[in-house]
Image (cartoon, rainbow, N blue to C red; front, side, top):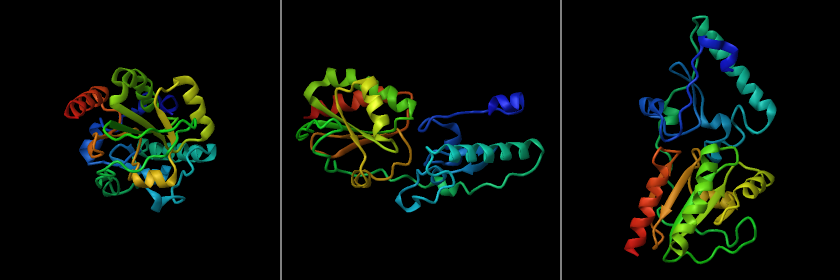
Length: 240
């Protein structure tokens, strides 16, 4: 679409957790789309607002080509209006400014087995990382590749469980064939996702200490994500 409008339109993509626009408007839920300073698409429009909004979004299910085409048509219409000097009718930012659900304060029950049928061992005494990811999320996949080396370096001090959301089984299988994770990957069942709180957007990562207490929640692909994970696990491991 940027090519369609040439130098008349500036397209800016900002990462969840590292967004000046989000800071300016107090946005805490993603994905969102602004045309100039007008909010034109919200998480619920793409199916990322929570159980209460399932089926109500304008572009849900997002994986369907016709819904993606509808979004592009709407966005094209909004941009053309602005280029013609007209106002764009958008949504109140208060709809996306509410603090997201940080999820459980203690580690919820994990599935007994992962996607491959491998048993998830008792995590008592270990630091546990729970990464919420999706097959279509490039920052998620980059971190998942990095986690292979991280798991190898930390051995039995840490257990990693990567929870796939909004992803088809066959797509998860393709990702696993490419990444060959040395840790556990599970499909996010409704029960598991409910226990982990609002997805809000991906990636979202929980860190639990050896006693199962939540030590941190990291939203998005922040620039120092891997350093924060490493620092937290090293610190919590020393405490144990």
